[in-house]
Length: 598
Image (cartoon, rainbow, N blue to C red; front, side, top):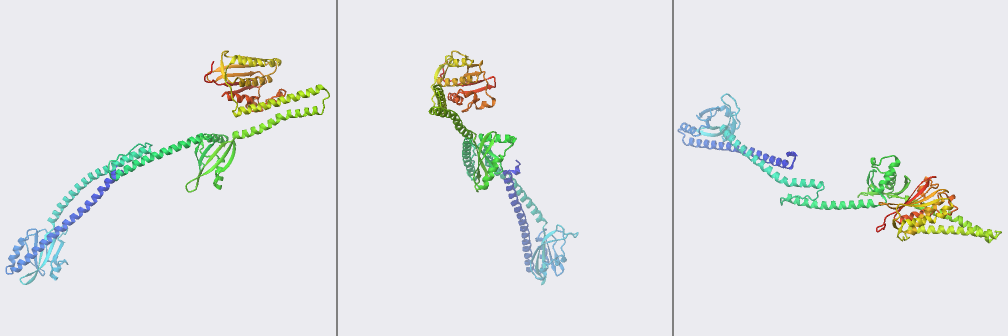
């Protein structure tokens, strides 16, 4: 920073200019006072001398010429005396300055000196005189005129003294005063610089501390060097620093608290200005914005404005001064929108906060509930209709023979079993989904366990001309799980594989392990497979890939939903891969449990 732009330079220059101005005024006044004092002394001296000459002359009238001659010698060489009688000079001293000439005409032509003749009064005056060449420049003198009674006649005495010697004295005096003023200015400059530096030093410390605080270093303290106002300012600055640090920490904690709340919220939150500029978002809101800009063909990183649908709701909320609600579907997901205006202290709307809720799961659950009622009604309608029809035939004695009655009773029995399986499956599924089903973990040897289950289906597979086998990676492995529930899983998967595998096909139950994932069991068949468009829905309730093919086996469509819930209850994972006319593979993973024995 330049010196003159700093506080030191400004304060230094101010003191220096002030002192210089005072010294200049004082010098001018002193010089003027000294000149006036000198002139006044010369006038008084000349006046006293003239009065003494008049006194002596009046006392010695008989020898006036001798007296005047003696008087002219007494006034010295610096002054000159002339005595006039009307227009005639009757006496002129021999001393005085010879550079200028005094004539009666010069005296008579001056209005002030003329009063000595006309009014008979003493006159004192400074006047310019001409030299021998007639020039008036630089020649001035003090003139004192006094009326005189000499030899009974009215005469006038005029004493002249040149100011040249006084001017030399004044000049030397002025030089001395200027020298003293110069020394005073130099001393003032040094003192002012020292004072300015001393005053500015704590201010520099405060500036450095303020810059450090602006950079976030709130522990910076200002040293207290003095006990004056600057010291009090340093104390106040340190107190302000502490309070500012406390407030910043409080704001930081509030910001972190708010950020944590926003990040942990399941709903999206967007705050934006009145012009639509986005101020703050959380992760769910970012997913909504990504979907919006992707569907509109824009890049999210290049846009900082809120979507148009939210701005429209904001305009409505601003018009009606209340929150507005809306809905929108983006990328197959349903979003609920709530926009509430934000106010300033003056009750002016400065922006809005938008709450964005993903309603897809709720909509899907509503649809599932509706579909569940429809599917249950559909599944129950056929057996109930058959039970009603055959029971009426028996009651009305429509059957003509005992064999027909037995056949009708068998159909009624089969349909009642089908209804029982449906109800039991629904109860099992409800327990699994509610989490009320308890699992009984046991350490199960995998090899005999899988061989027992596959052998259970060997008769049925043989009837259909299907080969079923178990393949184990490790015959000695043991694992902890609920054997009854996993047997239910394998039974369902193997039963489905048998129903969808044509004669001559094969079904493989494969066991393998992974250090990272756990126990993996695959149920692979070479059947007709599952269409690609149906794969995402195979684990849904009442899903049937081919209702015509499962009708005879009385499938309920709940088996795979139960399977998935049993695997989830074991903290496992189940997946399916299928190719039409090439086969299907269901794979489920049971994670390792601490203390699992192998």
